[in-house]
Length: 203
Figure 1: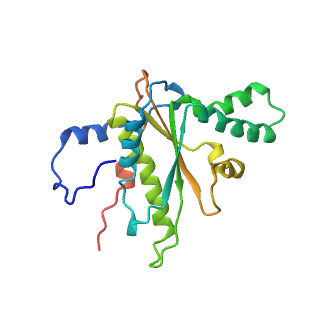
Figure 2: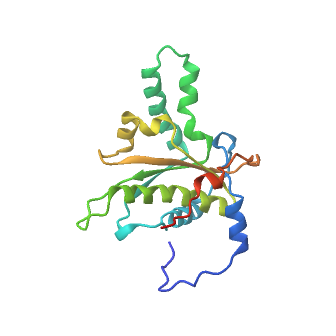
Figure 3: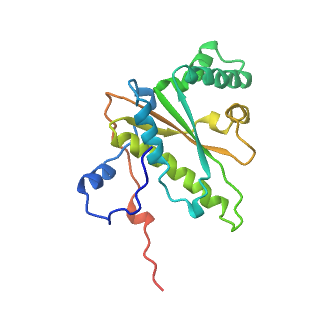
């Protein structure tokens, strides 16, 4: 971890950053492969991910990191929960479900973990901060040359899987961030018509 400077430079025009953001596109986890970030790079990505708006500095989120065999071990719980609810489906579907986290060499679960605040920071603001962590981690990974995708999928909302993660009643999975390498370029997607979603307030 790096030392935090006392002062930061004023905003400057950084066209390369603007170009990166203007052309950013998620990479599909199913197209990912290795290698993923090494330990020092992984830690640097998490440090960047945590640099988000956070009203009153509550840090209302936490990380659960899946690497190596841990991805498949956690996947066994996913497969078991799925087949319990879908016993009529063939066994190869359980294999598919159990392999979800193995699509990328690194998967990070971002846990929204609201905290009680004497001054009353709304839970909604704390949850928004967790969402910002998810996106910031994607941006950090891609800026380091890795593929990244923010997913939830059904098991992010399954109480049994969240129990395995050790979530409390107040916590929720904000997202699973898949990070790895890819040789498949991201394809374009339809974006909102900004004229339909922008209004200029007039008294």
